[in-house]
Every structure is written in structure tokens, then in C-alpha cells.
Length: 217
Length: 217
Image (cartoon, rainbow over all chains, first blue to last red; front, top):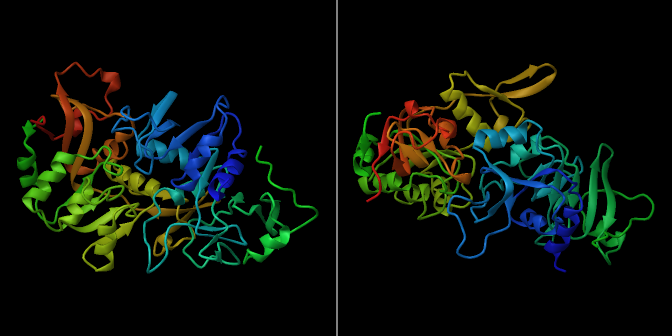
């Protein structure tokens, strides 16, 4: 199993029946494939649909039905088309149960930076600031390190996406829960030792008792 | 209604330097024939207010690549390297606005409100220089209304009164922008006789629309 699939499978376990969930573009969008059908989960795409479904078979694409990355998608039975004001009203107004977003850095306060690398890359925040501010639960799904550098750091050096402390970080090495006391190591990836996680993490992690392996079922 | 315009005639009415809202999300729901006509006219110095600048060769991306745009107010430019290059070289000014804040600022501009109070952006660099108000114990950023000289709307279907309906994720910013400009030009994919669109289905009432674009030849 490659790193992205491992992360997506573990994040999928966070999704409960009946939730309204927004998946960010890139790695987070892979999560949907591992959510069992029949949970009654609706996925929102912030560009305007509640009830996002899998990409349609070739030849059945609709030019007016895309996800937030511009890719062709389908709509599940019971889906609703919405405009951007409604879409962000859902996000900001506390109607969205969970968002899964990628990250550039998360720090010991649990704060996320994921929209700008000054001087190098300024893609813009898109919906990220609203999602992190407004979603009931914020899960960051990302590789533990980029170019050998830990993405879990003592303090974010990149511009913050929001002040809010995110609820969970899922990487290819670990599951980490940001708390008021600091970053709590919850689970380790299959075959990865706690020492290896600590060595790969620039931020301080709180380790208490035995740390179980992720159960990826 | 003031009658249907050809794309060329519509582009002639939009002067260089105009402030133009353009609907669409990565070009889905953008008025593509109007954009082509602006490029063909060689428009210059436009301020474009839109969710994003699409991709090179697609939708608003064509305006960027053709040098029509001096300023962009958007939530995301990450899919268009030409916008990024214009920003880095100082040819295009870019104001990045969180997507939910952008749509609410446009809504405020169109609905006669003096601004929007939002928690999105608190504690981040986009809060710089903005007033923070405390309402019932919670802090909010004061974000000001946005209006434009023109709103260019992409719709699925119009009737001859100008009533508009949209399809799936092609709604996005279009219904909100139709309220927020001095002159509103809508480009529908088809125009049907009055009465074909049921009153309950209308998403943008025709009274807001100054001009329809003629049907595609």
C-alpha cells in the first residue's frame, strides 16, 4: 500500500454515518473511495454540489458537473446543486461536519499553514480559510515530511490558514491529535516504531503508554 | 430587457479599465463567448473579480494570457501559471480573498449591505489593516462590499425576459454577481420562449439582467 492510500484509508475511518464532509483537492479527495457505501454520507464540493459522486464513465461526463479541482464527477441520488453563497454558508455556518485538507505545516499549537509559500508559490487560499474556520471537525491529511523536512513543526513559519486548532493529523507515519497540552501521538503506521516517528518529527510529540498501530482493515 | 447583443457588441460596451465580475469556477459556468470577444477586441486594463483565473487557454485564463487584465480579485490563482507570472513580474495586481468572504462581499455589494462580519481570516495575514468587531463575545473581521461596472454571467438557459437557470456546479458565483454590477450581461446556452422556465425554477430573475447574449450560431 503506498503512502497516500494508507493516509486515505485511515482518514476514511473518521467519517461517521450521516455526515456532511468536504474533501480538499489532491490527497484528501482519495478518501471517498474508502468510505463504505450505505453510510448515508454526503460529500460537498464547495464549487456547488452536495452529494458528489465518483467520476463518471468515459463519455458520460457533464461539462457542468465538476469538483473543486475542475475534474468531472457525478452526483449521487439525493444530490443538490447550490451556489457559492449557500456553499460557504454551509461551511462557515457550522453545517459541515468534517473537512479533510492537505497541509504544508502543522505546529505544536495545532495550527495549519496550507495556502502560501512566500516568494515561491502563491496559489491563494481558495476555500481553505473558511473550511478550517467553520467545519465542526478539521482533519489534516498529508505526508509526514516533504523533501526530507518534517511538516510537523514547533511553530508554523508559513502564513497561517486560520487560528483554529485542527482536530487530527493523519500522515504516512502516524495519527496525531493536537490538544491544549500539545501534539498527542495516537497511532503509528504499520511497522513504524515510535522512535522512528519521533526522529522524523521536528515538533515535540507527547507519548504516553503503548502506541497502537493503525488498523486499516 | 434591452434586447440581445452579439458577443462583439457586448465587448464594445465594456471599456478598457472597466471593473468586471465574471462568473465561473475553473471556467465551469463562465461566459466563454463573451470572454473570447473581449480577447478579440483587445481589451486592456480590466479589473476582474472572479473566484479564480482558470487555466491558460481556458475561460478567464484567456484574458490573463492576452494581457487584458491589470488587476485580479480572486480566491485562487494556483491553476494558472500566467497569473502567477504576471504577479511576480508586477504586470498584474492580485488581491487574494477567501472564497466564502469573496462571495459574501459581492452579495453585500449587490444587496445593499455595508459590509460583512466574518470569522474567516482572523489571526492570518489577510486580517492586516482590517477592523475587528466583537459581537456577543465573538470576534469578526469587517469585510467591505464589492461592486463592479459589469457582471458577465454564464447561465444554462434564459427566457426572453432574462430569467436564468443554471446547471449543477455551473451556478457558483453567477447568481450573486448578477446583483452586484451596474450592467449585467448574461450568456445562456439556450434561450427559450417566456413561460418555458417555471417561476419556481428561476434562480436569477430577469429584472436583474440588462442584456442577453444572442444564441451561439
